[in-house]
Image 1 (tube, rainbow, N blue to C red):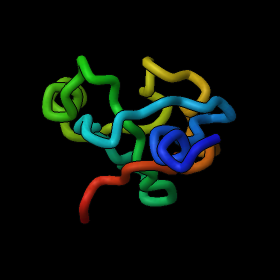
Image 2 (cartoon, rainbow, N blue to C red):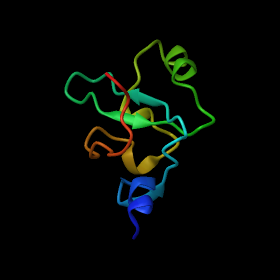
Image 3 (spheres, one colour):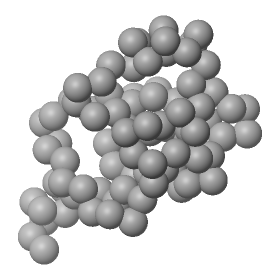
Length: 84
């Protein structure tokens, strides 16, 4: 795998997912005090709309777009994390 390909890929629940570093990835954070993991959203979803629909309390179990990481027990994904 070339250096460019390494930069374009990230591990996602055991799957290798290609991500364009120029593409803006929106993330959402689990509201559980014992979790707090960040999960990436598909390009067609907006975190503001999701948070509004669930009273600003989003949990990993509500992750309907990627069931492989739809629990707080799933590992934190690596890749392009949001700026803190």
